[in-house]
Image (cartoon, rainbow, N blue to C red; front, top):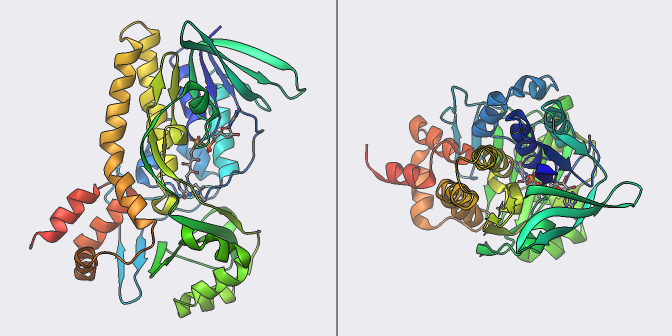
Length: 392
Ligand SMILES: Cc1cc2nc3c(=O)[nH]c(=O)nc-3n(C[C@H](O)[C@H](O)[C@H](O)COP(=O)(O)OP(=O)(O)OC[C@H]3O[C@@H](n4cnc5c(N)ncnc54)[C@H](O)[C@@H]3O)c2cc1C
């Protein structure tokens, strides 16, 4: 009998398990994957996510992998470029983009070091339900043997296609369909000195430095054109870059060192708890990756849920009350960015008012820093647009 079984051991699950174990609770952390392993995701982490790693004492280990800081964000709209430094979070503005196979392994090791029992190759297939409440999981270990484990709470940290959410009947209450289809790959000899975003009508791409002196370059088309994009991934990816000829020339001189990986995600918020179960990370909240919020959101969720469950396990707060507060805090914090992100992901030309605001921001360093801060998650979209619309 555990206090918590956490299903899924990446950005949401491993920190949840780590923080609960550090608080002295009995935690089982399971994943059908083994670590280190990669997952379908680019991996820019803005300053608030980096601040979480620092709070947890894990930032040094992440930086020791050799991923460089990203201090400046740039947004090339074709006619003009905004270049700014985000407002800091806990004293630092820098983003980093550690490869997932490195980062996720650090997170899993930290959970184990904190005392969580980690089981890889463990696939959860069902929930154990008694008297209407979830009391455990059923699954299979690496030998294929059926295993049942019981806990006071089951935490679904199993990603956007969460089986825990499905089995528990978690309801989505805000939904938008897939907006863009993106492919990414890694390039050698493609130096970029910013979190570099290029916005063109119906197309968009971003590039940033990662481990091993490589640059990740991700390029999206509207989801409605996904079939055409997929028909010739490399040709379409390279042809689209010609919308910024100088950048395309630099890519032509670089060397691609990995296959193209592609995907699209829906946008939703789900009710993140019910009797005996909790959802963290993408399982409870998914948004298009265009603004790179998912990992930071997963860290926030992990921290808030672990703190709430700690109070529940200590008998200080009833489960329902603790988790309702977590949900409310999550939604207040994330909803404006969720709306902004899903709008951006449509890759449609900005409405005239927004286009005018962005055009007016060029050369105004405070405004450009403000827009960078919106993407970094250190300034709310509404705050930025209200301020930008107010004459100085
Ligand atoms: C193309 C793309 C690009 C992205 N780029 C960025 C970016 O630049 N920055 C950013 O912050 N976010 C980005 N994201 C989002 C980010 O990947 C997610 O928000 C983040 O991975 C969520 O973490 P998680 O732990 O909730 O889920 P996941 O990372 O999906 O992990 C879920 C884990 O659960 C395990 N699991 C699932 N089902 C079971 C089961 N039944 N039994 C046992 N284990 C199970 C899986 O094996 C997996 O390890 C991107 C996403 C995509 C698709």
